[in-house]
Length: 277
Picture 1 (cartoon, one colour):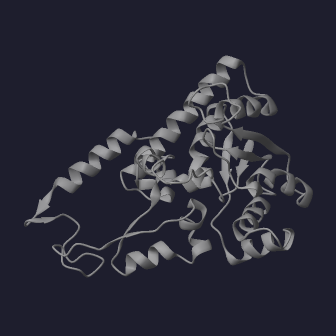
Picture 2 (picture 1 turned 180 degrees about the vertical axis):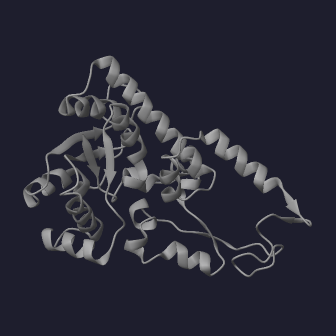
Picture 3 (picture 1 turned 90 degrees about the vertical axis):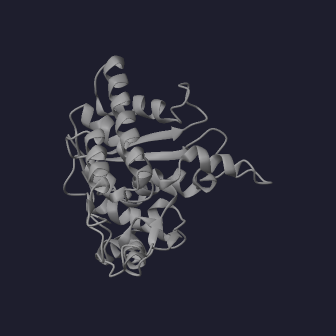
């Protein structure tokens, strides 16, 4: 089965898990293309005016999958961690899509709610995975468990790449490669360790036109992943900053446990799942 996955909202957060899960069952995961003006306009046309721009973009991505897949995978996100919640518009998104886009193929709708999941540490994904397997007509409990672990493995690999400094788009593209992350990381370290005339290979005056001994200023680009990593949404902000000789850092390159440790020091608890990061 060709299962569509919109390249919007929390695609940059949890898509690798669902990719690994679905592919383990033999499904082909088809992702919508990059955000364009035409795609945005199609989403705006189908969405109520009160919806935020990221939701309108999501509608456009869902529409883009209409004629190329057998089903569209659409999680109903409620809570990603214990004692936290996601935006209400995320919770209602499947209902909005179902009501506004009847021309779509069947929806695979699962609820991700960390507060209800009986499997410790799965943050709602185990319950959602079991539901997805039932809707897709896939396998036994043993096969579902194996697919769940395949999804976890791919998600972990993805997060390791982010911590190593890869952009989420690059990391997701790398998941299609069959070389292990260990081999890619070993090659990267070996390459960065080489020296050419006392200078790191591939640097020198380089693309930026700066001297190799002139460090780039580091800038933190902080925001929701669907705003930060969608170049069509933010008009290529990261590329523009890199062109201005900044080294761009995003929240994905900071270990989650470090960010949550600092969040716990705040005088008021933050109950939005991504807001804590």
